[in-house]
Image 1 (cartoon, one colour):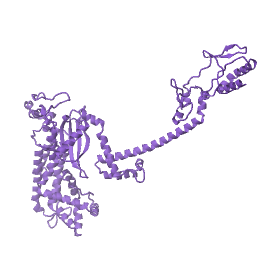
Image 2 (tube, one colour):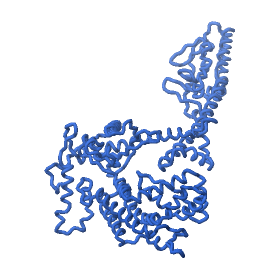
Image 3 (cartoon, one colour):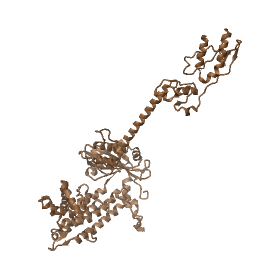
Image 4 (tube, helix red, strand yellow):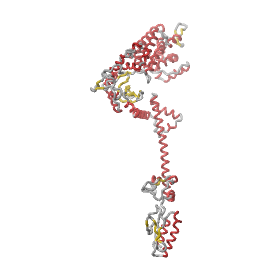
Length: 639
């Protein structure tokens, strides 16, 4: 009976699909047990992998994998070979959690392994009982169901966190774009918070995600500065830009020294290089902090920055600056010190800045123009000091249907901003005089003084004359500020400007505004000149003064332009215009062979000989990293 119980236990440990198949065998073996006590039998108990540890194996004899059983007469007979279960790829489509077995390892449950559940499908070697029923039982098991819930909960939480992070990242991206726009448009960083408020009011949902808590909204001025610094660091770390500059055969430095609001010295640095496609590009390198602002400190900072970025000074061929003595000094200036590292370096004083200096210095030597600038400055500060005055002026402008303009300040270092202030006074003169006339009745001493100065004939006459002269020079300045300016076009543009100024001075060209002034002046019944209903004082006495101011300013301006942009310049920069060959069509055939020889000789003298650096090293200018340029013996044909 003991052996019977073992047999029955082994039987029910089998898969349900095997019960009918083995029923007859169990019955026969029980009969044999009763009729023959000396007979022995062997039954194979192929239990489920999950129950294999508790299944008893009954006396078995194996011969070449065939199960041998004992017949009723006591003689052994060979049974059929047992069917071997194998893996089926189709299970992967039915059970998404199933993992295909590999070599010596069985199949796994990805869900249980991820959740850390202990099952036959998550052990080291996996489950090797390749049966559908095994998979069904595992799918319905409690541990597997718990694992599914845990993994689903984790996945949902991960999605929630990911969505929250994405919203926050997009919000930060909006903030970065805002500070970048402020920098590109030269808008004060103080406007960062109000710009976000505007976007919020316009329904930009991403801006709201910047607010983490009641006290943390990332809208402060400090946040804006940190984001701008991050943008600057990203631009400086741009691998493509750095690689392009390193691969360029030559590059030039563009620098400008200034002082920030914290009274700290700063040096902005750009590098202008040539790509393989011969495209000239300017790239921002850094806004460098200067502890000292002398030429040695600036030179050391430039060299340090170039070394950090891997830019060789032997390829540095140009330095562009504002012309300050600390930059262009012949002995101890920054350009002189950099030439000690590369003797082929050329120093270029910004031509737009040179032109601005021509104008400001021309005005500085004319007495009344200095007084005129002081009047414009006084106007600016008079209205800046009181919002009430500005409001009343605006009411006068509305009443007179005049343009509603704000009086602007004149900057000495940006003299062409003078034109903006000049134009504002020109267009608002009627409203200004009306306002000061009303204010003078309230015993406002400043208003009385400004009213008297604005109604002098010399003030209004100079205003109209300057409205004719300044635009002539401004047009030349705009040409100089083009990104793709042709150096060969500088000389003819300068010559045209000088010619226009000379013609205006001599009266050969009637200025539009000067002519308009004479047409608009009316004589009152008392033979008093008036303009827009306002009396002009001392016209007869001041006509000669106005003419002297006009002639003196134009003479000074033409002289300064000739000095700073000489027509017969022998400099290397000026000599480059011969390579453009624009004027060949105007050269007589018999002079073509000699045309440009003098300028070519200048270029050969600078680039065609070896030079020695400040450290005593021989420096050769090259047209490529491997080929030497023209040697000293080169002639014009070699060029």
